Length: 248
Image (cartoon, rainbow, N blue to C red; front, side, top):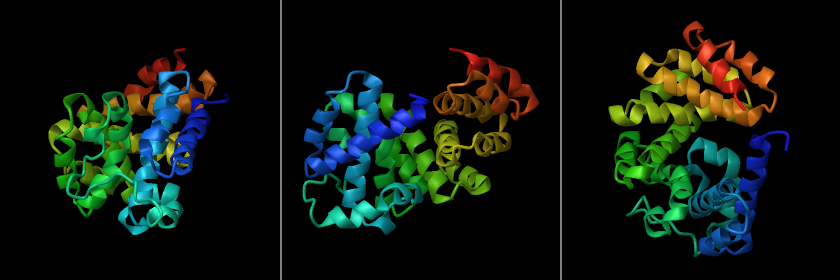
């Protein structure tokens, strides 16, 4: 593969397709993902299953902007034909809180799109819902909300920072991590993410730049290209960014 980013897109799409193939029986679709070889491949596929489930269960206008862009066209087509879709407005964490544990990380990584719809885009309430998930998945849920904040604001740094601040101090940095990844991946443009990192307070900058490196490693197999992107970071973070980006 030229990049893990492209491989992820393929595997994520497979999860969508398996869910459609099995008529939105998500357990059957997840079982199809289980046939993949590595845990990373399976997790990537699971994410497609859970996104498809959310998109098919909500009207397009209920979805965060990022999910509308990816999936809104499917939601109307399959809504009336998919009684097996698993979402419950009275329990925004369902089905993540009722499936086998090894699926839960991937589920909570997508579930915030349902949470924000069910809370009518009250991000403060959405952060509270994320605080209720099992401890090992709280940061995943916060990062997922960061992705949705990014999509909801159309990747506007000022608005993104303001909405991430609706959460607790514990959630703030993880929200920025999810947001910066979405800033970069939506347009495959590292400079958008670096621009967000520059705006953050010192407590969140390090995590923001670390998340940027994670994305660079998935986008660019070429170490030199990753290092060139890091060179656009703030002076105090260039060396650490380039060192991490150049690692195998």
